[in-house]
Image (tube, rainbow, N blue to C red; front, side):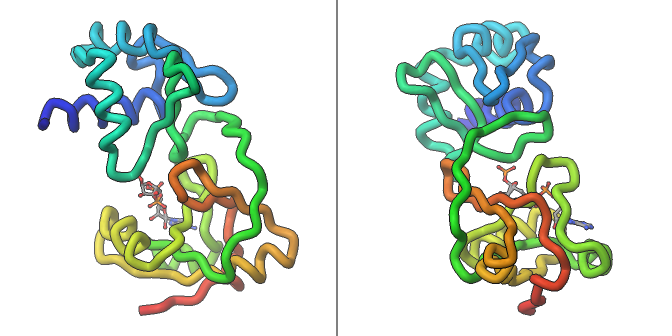
Amino acid sequence: MADLVRHSKFLSLILRHQPEAAGISLDRQGWAEVALLLAGMQKAGHPVTPDMLEEIVRTDEKMRYSFNEDHTKIRANQGHSVHVELGLERKAPPEYLWHGTAERFLSSILAEGLRPMSRQQVHLSADQETARKVGQRHGKPVILRVRAGEMHRDGAYFYQAENGVWLTDNVPVQYLDRTE
Ligand code: HQG
């Protein structure tokens, strides 16, 4: 099991940030060829069989990855730092979304709003519990409420990734409320 986690972290690196670490490239929509990916992972010290890859995708607790229909291609559902066009449809968000961050980022966020930082878009959670977990990854968590409905009515675009995570380009500070 520990092996699968190690391989999954490497997979995330390849499919979101650094495909060249497995000697492969992603297409414009972020897809990698499974056969090339597995060969590249093997060379990089991550021997993963097709069955193991299926298991990694199926059991991932955040649904980070998707296959295409015939499972010859795979991509990350969100979280990229490399430029990809996920082809998501714009979608009207719920009235409120949530962003979990750490206390130490707060003054900067309250000065300039939420920015994508190293990723392509700002990631927002549909519920507070998820936002708390996201925030905890960075330190003492702070949950911000995003007035997404209002932002959308004001003309901002929202997208929802395959795994339910909401995405938008940035969140100006006037749509943010600190909850705790
Ligand atoms: C913060 C994980 C200073 C932002 C999660 C966050 C998520 C600012 C950090 C997904 C800022 C970036 C994304 C500003 C934003 N000044 N700091 N103006 N604007 N920040 O990891 O949202 O496990 O890139 O609050 O579950 O934490 O990778 O983004 O704290 O879904 O699959 O800059 O990643 O999923 O951190 O997390 P991240 P995130 P995975």
